[in-house]
Length: 505
Image 1 (cartoon, rainbow, N blue to C red):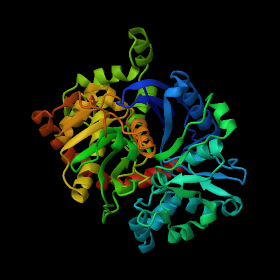
Image 2 (image 1 turned 120 degrees about the horizontal axis):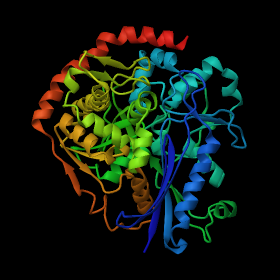
Image 3 (image 1 turned 90 degrees about the horizontal axis):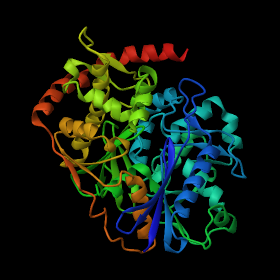
């Protein structure tokens, strides 16, 4: 039996999953790490802590299988991170992640210019504080000396890759989410680099997502307890690989991910630039692009609600032997669809698609005397999905109608939440047996690089065992609520900016 490992370096954890060629999970390992918020708009991580989590999860997953069965290891990682390193690869900054909004002013200024539109159309990345381009614009204004003395600006995947192999390399997929990479020529885009104030020499060498290192350095082999050398495949970004891993690679098939954040995406043979700059177009592999939009506010909103307004879920869950979030789902499920007219704008971390406004803020709207904590919780669930539904509308306008949704990410473990998606979207939702779609996508890409044919391609034959069909009555209720939801942000945009400014003082 051959085994392939997909390593997924996510926003809050590293996962190493060993699959057989049918996509069945043979072993898995997980290790989390915190997000650091040293200032109100900052979101960072310790690169070395992330690297240690990658190594620990790889070690555990490898130790659970026979080394002779391991065919290779493929990488997936979160997008938009930025680390400044010296010529020895030692970080001189923390890893600044997608949720960091410090470059809001720089992004707003560039987005409104012809140069900003030109960069968007060539790179496929919306101009927003999430992008490394805008992070570099912030450094250019606030720490110009850092630009001069930094040897390389890299992502978290590049940092891990360098630590393992001593090479500064980045796959086309992760590069295409930087705002610095021409997705048509697959080279660094000089006008974007000029705007950021950096040179090509300060960036990694772009390589095909199928690129592999067949022979491991002895130190790396020893670190991972591998008796023999096995190939490592550089892979792609987590969002793109989630489409591959769920099988959302045909027209009309969308992959919906809700983890810490969220996104909805389709796979297309070419970029689909949106005139309103609402959507991204990232590279999956040669001739395959993933078009869609991300939201900042996914499961992290539930964590916020649990940590600040819930005192009983953890001990109650511990006593019952279930996930604390399952108790939140049960409480919300008691409330009727539409939360009795209560709406929630889920912009606690600002928002990316479709509004691309780092100053957006969360709002409960329509609170009445009869509303309870359970109503607030139900509105939170519905508001998160409404935000993604709004992205799906832009995606439909740009890339064509959606027919079916493939669900993955942490939310897919909750039947309540998956049914909520089916009802709001009025579409069939399909679950894959493994929720680790990005890791399986990384494994599939690695198999392609190794010229090994999986027994199930592009998804496991058992992938579509669960289907959720929409309820038309609930959908009608949700449409009424959504018609109000989508009008609230334009009405409150100026006030949100004003209150955001107060919060940052």
